[in-house]
Image (cartoon, rainbow, N blue to C red):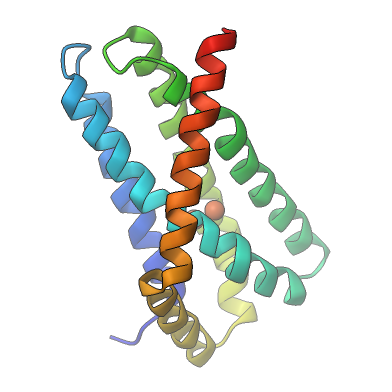
Length: 173
Ligand SMILES: [Fe+2]
Ligand SMILES: [Fe+2]
C-alpha cells in the first residue's frame, strides 16, 4: 500500500483514542498506571502536534481556500488550548484523585473532537489539495523528522514546559 501522510496521522489519532480509553478505565488507586498512560499519550501526541503545526498545517494553509483557512485557524487554536491550558491542568492534579480523572477525561474528549474534525474536514480537503505522490513524500518526511535530533529536542522541551506549567498551576490553585 502506498504511503500517505493522512493515513499515518489518522492511525496516530486512533492510537491516542485507544490510550485515552485505557486511561478512562483506571481508578484513583491506579496511580502508576495513570502516570504511565499519561506519559505514553504525551509521547504520541507531542510529535504529532508539533509536526502538524510546523509542516503540515502551513502547507495546507498555503493551498487552502477561504474555508480551508478557517479550518486551519480552528485547528491551531485547539492545539493551543490543549497545550497551554488542558495539559498543564492535568499535570497540576495528583494522579490518584478525582481531579486528575476529570481533567484527563476532558483532555481525551478534546483530542477526540479535534482529531475527528481533522479527519472529516481538514484531511478531506487535503486529499484534494495534495496528490498521492505529495502525500507519500510528506509521510516519508514525517517519519524522518520523528527520528531526528530536532524532534527529540522538541519532545524534551515540551515535556519540561508542561511539567513546569503544571507545578505553577498547582501552587496557584
Ligand atoms: Fe491537530
Ligand atoms: Fe492530528
